[in-house]
Image (cartoon, rainbow over the protein chains, first blue to last red):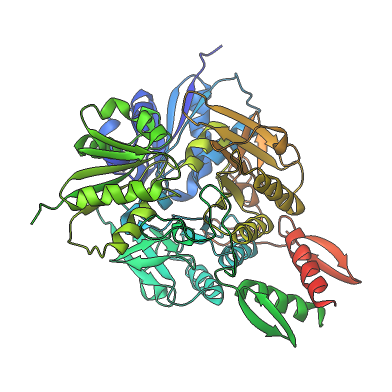
Length: 307
Length: 307
């Protein structure tokens, strides 16, 4: 019987040394075998002298995950390295799928150690201001493994419900249609002046960040290494920063005084305040106070039913 | 004229030393004044000996932000400290609001330094498996600053579009209704067996994590320090871990072979595969192939219009 191996699944954050946690560095130092996509391995090359390295291309994730699990199961100390957070579109989920296929159980070899990292939303956000100051979502535009209708429905829902939207994997050499469709969908629900940040290679050598808006985001180069952050109806640009406020202005004056009718520690009192993007529309002769998303949903349903 | 001050806005991650980045530690060490909520200040107390500390209670965020900005504007080196990522429901957005009110411009004092951290979604996720392996959203259930109808609409949209849902600030002593309503809304769109993780005080002394499901999440104590992670229709529990797969199983066999009709590097071919949670329903005599969310939306609209 072999000793119990250890399988670290490590997120190294954006890749610059000073944004990688001590826990992630300790895991990589402790490992005998390092497994990862070539680009990520390069980011930690200073730590891996003398270790065995298994690096394969981007479309060979299953092979990497299997190799890592097998080596650790046999008693090795193995670190699977992802950039950002390994749990966010990273290798962690695939490692669990491989373990399940192998019939692994808790207590078996290997022991699992999941080390969180700073995900691209946070690292990119910090370079352009505070875009994630209120409710947000992450959507990957890659349809290599997910049916496009599922992705399209998520874009529509997120746009209609006024989430800040972070788009991962927005485009690649072969995939260029998805970001065009995503822009059009979001535009149906939000003003063209809604602020958008495009961040490439955050905290790496070729770092590049642009603040633009929904009507102009397609004027810029968007690729595999770009993260797209689309503001909500509440987001604003201030001195070149993209900011989504938490909403203090609904209850407090700029000086911190509580506004009339509001109470600290209690639910926000709406009074005559409407929902941020609701408006009165007349649809087939019926007045309706709703959001652009509500209205579009109603139109689709009515068309479908031939009402 | 005063020297140009520096205002660091720092996310320290979950609070354990080995999950705080070197960049965050360096900012705190460099600062002369530390500003933060008492709980967060305690997490970094080893670093702040001899420094001036401005700590106030949780509902005094505006006062803290103003104090920090004023001190830095006058030439001081000030660090505003948040747990998690300061940009995610943290102090960063409020700092920008205060700067805007003061008429600050780029180049003025203070210089801004935004340091990203590991947000609660990532730290909590790493303790329970890989719940964020595919598209997800973050929703705060606090209606102290956001109208509840806005929050409710986001929950509905996220549930209908099959996002993994992370709920921040799910409840407090006074706010207990919101998590009940959120559970009911999500339950209308997802099976009661959908896996749910409840994580409290990740990587801190009183850390506690539970895996349950949508029908039973309200059986557990949920408070200010709890993060609720609700799986998507694709999430599964394996050996006590909550995993949301990326979707490799749609295109590859467990051994990594490409399935018939699929091509690596190309869009997923759907064939006869339906959307994950779509089903045939008969609504007022009309057959419709849609998701539970679609159907509910149709019912609401039909009721509204009296169709």
